[in-house]
Length: 156
Image 1 (cartoon, helix red, strand yellow):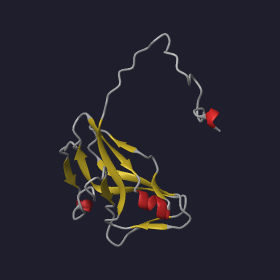
Image 2 (cartoon, one colour; image 1 turned 45 degrees about the horizontal axis):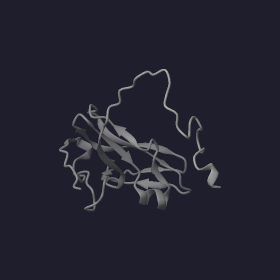
Image 3 (spheres, rainbow, N blue to C red; image 1 turned 120 degrees about the vertical axis):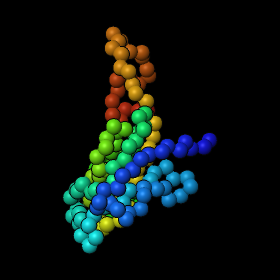
Image 4 (cartoon, rainbow, N blue to C red; image 1 turned 90 degrees about the horizontal axis):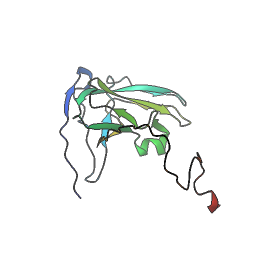
């Protein structure tokens, strides 16, 4: 199975010029890395528990029928406790503002984010639009209305 190439228009904002384009860093990678578009020499330092909205320095035009999901980078999460707060963040096809990432420090030490640092990854995917239909009843399943943590309870 091969991947579908989706062309996405991108416009650099003045503070993003000179940064690398979002890109996957291996042949099989699903996500394109996003870089911090912070002023040179002015890192954002996240104290433990602190969050910040980090600009990426570009706007883009996703084709209708697609979305982009902003996800954490596993290395930042595992090594430093830095993650995307609203993971995955959703970028809609009709959004034309700057791409930004909400990062939070769940680690125990302060963490400095510098210009050009890869802070998150973006996965572009097709969207299926649901059509909700009001019914008078739903089909019966084995699980039924049992909620959070209810599956697999008999296997303890």
